[in-house]
Length: 216
DNA sequence: CGCATTTGACCCGCGC
DNA sequence: GCGCGGGTCAAATGCG
Image (cartoon, rainbow, N blue to C red; front, side):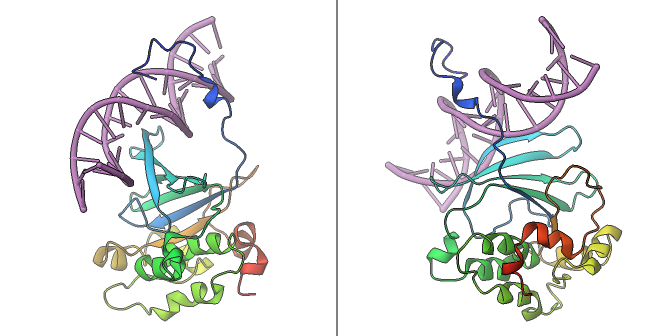
């Protein structure tokens, strides 16, 4: 590396394999904090300035040695209040919170609202027995928009989406009053010809969450 | 002392 | 072939 110019022929083929074709999930989160807790522990391993955005992109890796999940976190240049989190890979373990005997998703959701819910969806798709999906989906309802965390904590429905599109309604109140609050919108994984529009419906969820995990 | 973050360099793929 | 942009590494540093 930079400090080892002498080591000429020292195995530099580690970077041979580029991006493996891992499943990727993008989440658009209305939050002022970049690093949203999702129940897992992440270690930052890099940060780069991106061309399209004035905000740097951060690279995180799951601290679990046998877990190769990575995630990129960047702010939307269009809407600084929106954090785009891209997950790559699948967790081969439960969340740190799980190990403590509590539903990590529930805890995370409890803390971060809808943000964790979307993540929980992803997570629930990976663990054998989904940690009570209904709880994850119902959670926002369990937490009615109190005066403090008055975020539109509804699941990514077309309604909330429209709100996000308009950039009104959900971003001000909650995000203003509670920094921790966030609204996450699950985005369609990269596909051949996907319009940049944020509009999606249940079809999107089908892409991300197997039907089995859903309330259906 | 151990772990997480920071930060600059390195490497690779892609477009021109 | 060259330059650019993106992704990763790892030493240095900070913090609990």
